[in-house]
Image (cartoon, rainbow, N blue to C red; front, side, top):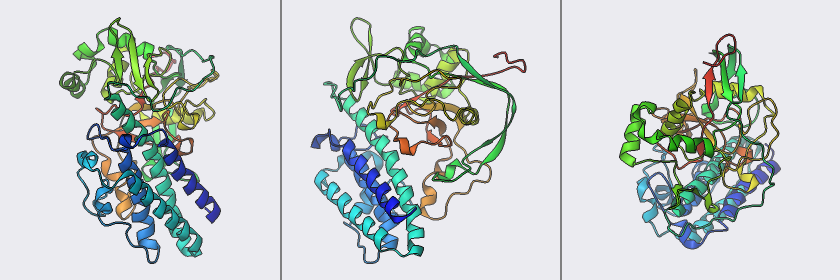
Length: 429
């Protein structure tokens, strides 16, 4: 990457984060509504700490830490770097102030640009990949910033609005429940194999044999999932994995996160655009893996494996994409798209739960040093999600991207697409 492109990429990502904060009041920056989420202020500081720690500290001569203590407050989980503040305590800190965090961002931004300008070719070849990792890391936190904020706003009985709903075309392709895209058995390659940026967990590329299968053309919708709810899906233990049924009972789940039923029995859902009537044709969102798996079983299907998902996506690289952060809706709306022959909305709308545990690919080795903690040490007890969501930046999207969360988590923009095995004659089983 040349210097001009590196400057532009860095500036584009950093300014996008700050534009996401423009609708906020100062009080919005400091709330932490649960241990899994972080305050907006912490996300702003942490993404800045990343550049200070991995780019400036080791490579900019004369750089001194911006402020002692930030390395403790804004470190997330990099044990090789040092100890960190207990995650559930992030919302307890009134200091540093929001203004100081923005000053911290400005100071680090100036220093990164200075480093890029002054670096010789050898040093530039070293720091450019680190800056690139940092920008993709910040794009992840742009999504987290919004989903963490959504959870915080949802706790407020006033149902605050982050942004007003945008005006969208009335035409929208009607999702088809029983439309499937089938694939024959055979060997396929999985994992990133090409030029451009990718995270270490997306490789190495390797071969996998697939049995014949079919994948749903459309994402599961709110209307379809509502039928599962009203059919007693949350009261039928035979539909649930054991851990999932325990979660349903312990947490009193009765519907997806943010669904609310009014006195007249109508369903609404809380969004970053406020409380809205449930849109039956929009993709269902904010499901745990357990809920997605139970729905698939109720529907007589299953979740796709991550290999099936990537194979299907690569077979239709021009598949119409769904809503992304760049579209400005900040909610899964079921973006207008032509039917085509392949699956719709593989990229965008919602992250799609798969049946695959998050494990290393054959031959995987984490990078050396502290950045090796980025992905590799989480390869236990998590499930893979594929695709992208309505709050994923378009520049962050890849067919090989492996998102991952613990199976009970549902504050992220997570939904599902169904899959089935096919018999050799093409019949669904």
